[in-house]
Amino acid sequence: MVSFASTLPSLVSFIPSPSYITNASRQPPQPGMICCKFGSELNNEDRFHRRDILQSVGAAVGMDLIARSSAFIEVANAADLIQRRQRSDFQSKIKLTLYDAIKANPDIIPSLLTLALNDAITYDKATKTGGPNGSIRFSSEISRPENKGLDAALNLLEESKKVIDLDSKGGPISYADLIQFAAQSAVKSTFIASAISKCGGNVEKGTLLYSAYGSNGQWGQFDRIFGRSDAQEPDPEGRVPQWDKASVQEMKDKFKAVGLGPRQLAVMSSFLGPDQAATEALLASDPEVLPWIQKYQRSRETVSRTDYEVDLITTVTKLSSLGQVINYEAYTYPPRKIDVTKLKL
Image 1: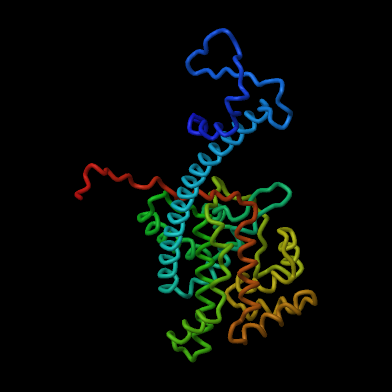
Image 2 (image 1 turned 135 degrees about the vertical axis):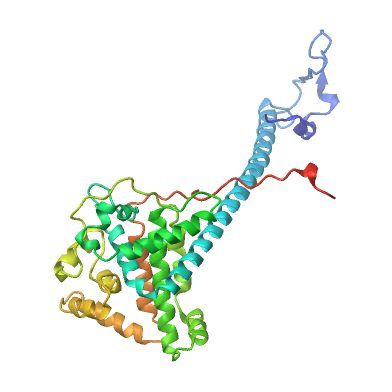
């Protein structure tokens, strides 16, 4: 309920002096009533208009509402900050678990990348179906020819999911999120490995090099796409090429179907099979893709590898959001209430 009582004193200054007031009625005034009449001898400038009272009351009401809405906004902002912190903490635990799993199984990186690509590229713009929805977890989909050899990657993520869910206060992680964040961790691992290689295999110097010149700060938008929902059935067949058998034109057509072009195809070469060099040699046979292959090969030879890494992160981010409605409250939970009566002061 909105109260105006506190605003009444502010109206006193608008009431004319007693010399201008005459008896308004023979009836005695009732408690709580103000009966007044303004003399006809007053000019327009000195008269106390009803409009003045309404404006004053309106201003008072506005100020009261603003004060109350500000308090509501402060509460809403506080709740939002709590949820952001909860999601951020959970995301950090996910990344740490995946980092450890990949570090122990570095040979699985190419399969993790292809797993994420094949789960995402089922998106169909016409029907708004498919995309990175975790449907590749279903046995009838993972067993398709285009997903041959990806079982080990999926099994690794199944084990990682058990660890992640065990420590989750806001519910289990979706396979859709898990698969895409595993790809992110795998990509980061390749970036760091390249930096270490440039430092002659010195892990400490390589990690420092990546921290100083790497692209770690470019993942912000990807991290915000957190809260994908899992599909409840496999995506339709025939939406994903067999990358090791597809022609460059078939690859281009598939990438075009989801809104990507030769540039993105070139930068995603490491996602298209275990042998990136062989994949790039094939892609370089196409005149539209060749300039981009050359550009990224030159970029990977530099210390910062900026062009290659930033474009790869941008493309992975776009793929990871195809057709998805993100639940930005996913993995949040009510904060634990504290019984102040039990506090020892």
